Length: 172
Length: 347
Image 1 (cartoon, each protein chain N blue to C red):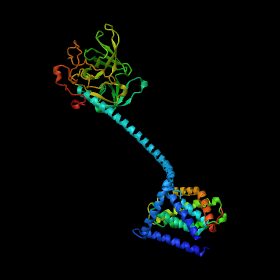
Image 2 (cartoon, chains in turn cyan, blue):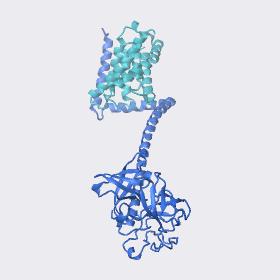
Image 3 (tube, helix red, strand yellow):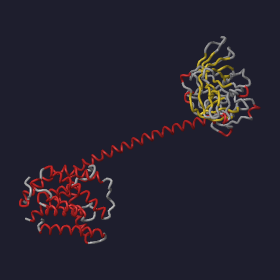
Image 4 (cartoon, each protein chain N blue to C red):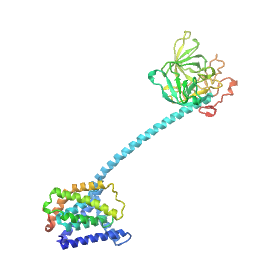
């Protein structure tokens, strides 16, 4: 049972990281790269709960930091993603999660992820963050996440329902 | 609120992340570098496969961004093109001015005129029907009224009035302008007056029975003391002869050598030559560049002008046309200089 959860989380997070690095960031879209990883993490958190959300966030963060061309400090993304996964897991009662609410959560998570990663990077001494581009980056990452949410969240929810029905918290 | 299991899991995850961060912060070789390289190899391999799988989509994406880049590049190139075109135009202008100055110095040095060069800075409005221009040399440069104005092609006009830094020049095509002219070769004398049209002057021969042919060149006869007209300056060439020999009046149409619509650099003759240059300044191969039509004049200055009764139109054998064809005692004072040679110029 735990293995199936681990499998679901691991596979979806891995797939999300690969897709983001090899497809989405190479499209050259204006602003930030569509962060499919954070959307997947939030989707898992919404579908499986805060603990699984935190685990997914941790795994996703580590993978993102390790995968080439990752150049950030290992663990920064891990902390941010795991925090977001945890919080979104239980912030709203599953029965009150309507579609706009879910989309809002996804958008806010993407924005928070961008900001928190940048802030943590700056705190730890990296000088690569350009703060005057930050508003544009935050906005575009939230927008792209909102666009991807209607695709990713139901898909993950469906997978969770089929693979690990015992932990599924939402029914739709 | 949170179950014990949840708290344990969370704590483990957070501590692990922080450990990673601290380990990585230290930098250098640590346990993490090994992990990093292994993970990089594995994930890098997967990324390569995924990249080929996704290549059609990313190709479309890069096509879009290339288009954007190319549009920007086109804009940059267009702007630079405009700038370079403007520069080329400026260079062409500069070349024209250099050529004009060259021609001017050539004529002035051959004819031994003392000149003050100047530039045309203003032209009288066309609706006044008076052909006057303003040049940027004035009384403080030694210009006085009734001085001759010339350029590399020949006579331009005379100075009407001066201020300390500018002068007004009335052009030879103005209706009020009248210049004494002499036909090259035959030495016939007449009056050249402006008609108000920029491409034709009217030449009235003193001797109505004199022989005048189309293509004859006119030079200034020269006034007393060289004011208002210095001698020897090319005026123009005859394009049409009216009337017949024996008629009371003989009027010819002369096309001026100077193109008054493109005046830029001119020179004011402050001291005429001590010796009349006679016909030596006329446009032949090499002396002066006449404006538009270069009609080769074979009938110039080879014969000694002192015996004007025998105007033999003989071809000038030598290609150096500035050899003065004048009386021997005056030959010593003129230098047989080649065009453009400013060694003798008093200007």
